[in-house]
View (cartoon, rainbow, N blue to C red):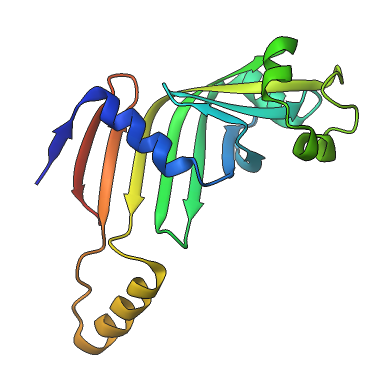
Length: 178
């Protein structure tokens, strides 16, 4: 059975799912056509559909984004049974005011030795378009119990929900997890 919720519900649901997962795998396509995944700490989710990351201007991902701005973000939290895949378009932002706004000294100075004024420091802005979310029906202990029960009975029970979110339109469609 599929259900659609309001436009803001879909966007809020994705934001709620990814807010606890601090690191995303950013997938870009190289000029040679290879897909490459890199971990990046999510800097801010002002979830009207935009996600921000700090990076170095000299990094290879910058060249990848320049060649093909279409990217994917993957978030996973095995303990809570939350998995999110987000499709979007990346752009490189050099706005010092936005960098200052997002900078957290205790965290970011570990990665960027030149500090927030380092000319190599830039932001990657992801304007999201589509997301798929999978959520487990229970806690990690419940999933372990379900696994043991499934091994004994052959019945895997409810695996949770899979949700498709059109982040541009904001629609959220729910269906049984497969």
